[in-house]
Amino acid sequence: MSTPYNGGGFEPYPEHPEGSHPENGSGSYHPGTNPGNYPGTNPDNPTNYGAQHQPDQGYAAFEVNSAGWMAGSSALRFHGQQLTDNQPGDGFSPHPINDPASNGWYHVKGTGKLQVMEALSWAVKAMMANAKFWIPVGIAFTVLIVLTQFFPGPVSLMTTIAVFLLVPWLLGVALQQTLVKHVTYSDAKAPAYGKTIGMTALLGFVGGVAMFILMMVLAVGALSTLDPSTVPDPNAPDADLAEMWEFIRPILGALTVSFVVAVLVGPFFLFQSWYAADNNGSFGDAFSAGLKAGASNYLPILGLGALLVLLNIVGGILFFLGFIVSLPVTFLAVAHAYRQVSCGPVPKEAVATA
Image (cartoon, rainbow, N blue to C red; front, side, top):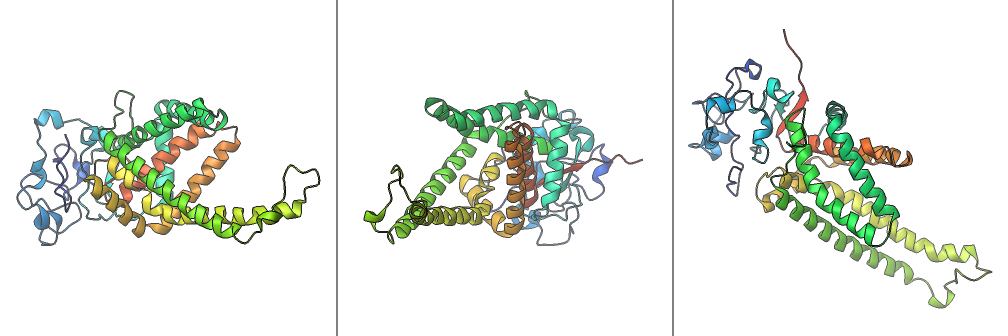
């Protein structure tokens, strides 16, 4: 069941009473209190979310069947439901789903700002904590990539399609990992799979067409300076390497410019599929929210992307065996980054207190 989206703002969180979980502290939500009184906020502040958007609905919009169903249940029951309200937290106060005893993680409300090293370090810890799940996933994904790269023709086409169909599922499972510390194969679900694959296809199509047009324009501009009659024959026995370089250099320049443009534009389109996979608003809202998240975290996203590319280059150098670890870490790091920038439940290592 997913919470309906109101078309303009964000619905409140599901109800999650403190109950027998004192770790949520006095700032956590209590039934009957102001629905805008999130942890760390002032209940008298008229600009809070509950007073501004849903004065009559509050957390009670999420139907709870029984207290017994809530007790001891992990946050996986919220997977596929909207867990953001578009209001940044302070990075310390617990998110309403917080329940370290059941989830394994301590959840705080995201600030909307990306902390790169926090995302990377958490991803490594999460992968190692749930290695029996992620290592086989990494092996399967690595095999598909190797087949795509080294077996052209029908095999490459089939594996490319398989990767395209697998990625939306991986996004959903990576988001599940941010909710609980241990995910099993029976738990692994992508409730917004259709929306996610639609968003991924849209981004791929629009991005591909835009890059093709850019490369063609640059290539035509570069080649227009050359005389076709002077183009060297690469098969000629006396081919002049200097002449070949003069011909290739403009094309390489066009490719380089296209690559730089793709890198610089990339941060604006990183999180759309994650918003879709999290069922966080409608299709259009997921697209626009991804743009806003990219704009407000532009440089950190570039930094995160550079580190993940470097990590996967190292994985590729190790005869692709490193992909078994680097690919799951990549998905998990971006999942954690999404929780941060969307002001959602950001997982942290739970620390036992006396």
